[in-house]
Amino acid sequence: MFNKILVANRGEIAIRIMRACRELGVRTVAVYSEADRDSLHVQFADEAIFLGEAAPKESYLNADKLIDAAIQTHADAIHPGYGFLSENASFAAAVDSAKLTFIGPSADSIHAMGDKAQSKIKMKQAGVPTVPGFEGLETEVDFKQAAKKIGYPVLIKASAGGGGKGMRVVNAENELSEAIESARREALNSFGDERLLIEKYLADAHHIEFQVFGDQHGNLLHLFERECSVQRRHQKIIEETPSPLLSPKIREKMGQAAVVAAKAVNYHNAGTIEFIFDPKTSQYYFLEMNTRLQVEHPITELVTGIDLVQWQIKIATGEKFPFAQDDFHQHGHAIECRVYAEDPMNNFLPSTGRLLQFIEPRGPGIRVDSGFAIGNEVAHFYDPLLAKLIVHAENRETAIQKMQTALCDFVVHGVATNIDFMQAVLKHDDFANGRVSTKWVEQTLESGSLLPAVLQPAAELQNLIAAALSDILFAGSKPQPAVSNETDPFSPWKSSIGYRIGENSK
Image 1 (cartoon, one colour):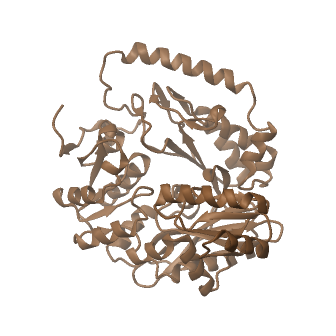
Image 2: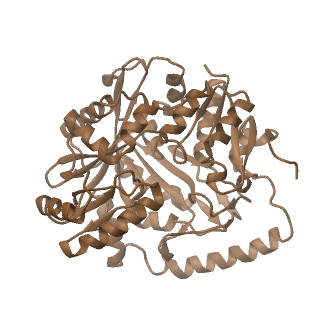
Image 3: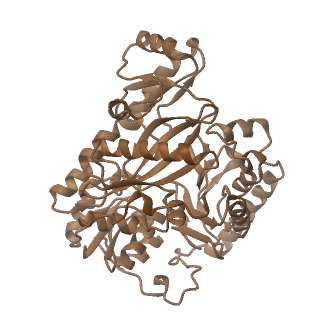
């Protein structure tokens, strides 16, 4: 087992990884930027090292600084979490070259699945169903011919993309030219690569992904699916498992396809095969592979009873994964809601400010993975995810009821959040009946049937009160160390803050 792991991330996922390390008896190193000087993940770690300015390229995206920090603190390994450099093949290779262990798949596997066009070709060769489409197109004429063969509507996608960037839906030929131009521009700005591919657009599709897990000895299996169709701008908001759509037969077929896909790139450690599922035909198609731990991994942990992060670490040491596919079953139902600092009444724009209240729900079957507490500042530099609220119950109906209650008990003042919005989703008949496609949020918002108008003045009033309280409570004072809502007498929050390296005292 490793003696010390550097966690190359921030927020809730950094704390999640550190907690797994603590349970394994492994010391941890946090890294932080200027904006995260007083963040919880810095306090949670055994020691912390300063990276640089708030801009990600000066801190969490700076591979050289991260590797130097690991060497300076005598860490054995680096866990990248998700986002930032977690799916960067060059970073994984650089970690290996520095005689450190990258806790994740090999650089070759990351590279093989990092390019949408090449990964799709590889999946076709492996016999995994893929969305009808074409790769390697260059001219507008090529795209027009391909679109005619596929049939409108079509989807233009960045070959090196992700997160919805460089993606355009085209309903007719007269929209194609502008879509190609804008997609290329966005792809170049976001990924430094303007290559595009074209696919058939499935308007009422569901987004269903399968967790795969393998060791370095050739053992690889799946840990079932996660339904991720509640999205806005291609960003997941609510996830659940099991999916309310899948029959046992389809679940087995998709799980087998996910394992075949992962084996095609000699995969080990945690990964996710994402599929588009057409409920009308029960057909499924490979979308992409995420070569890392997913944001929504907790719901898989709750229904399978396995700690994915601990096993990531164990597998990285060379340990065998001592399970067979038949050892795993789905027990009960789990739902995750992502609590974002964003304003649903203002096109989901991020909200910044100091947290004046941050009260997490408690109770049987309720789990909160968070990276914030009262007094913390929510800055504009990073993803506005405040926390992940996860519930587990014996069935889906009970899990929905438990989540609604937990959301009511989640109190956040100081920034706008999407808590009321997620309540509206959970109460909608379409969600209750499992009829939520990837375009459902946009379509339902346009119809006006999702967010009650009464929320707008309430949100505005809350923001005014929060601003006034901030002026009273924090005027002229430096933010204090974060305060936790932990009631555990052995909570690390109650111990002294870990020491920091690499910064001038202030």
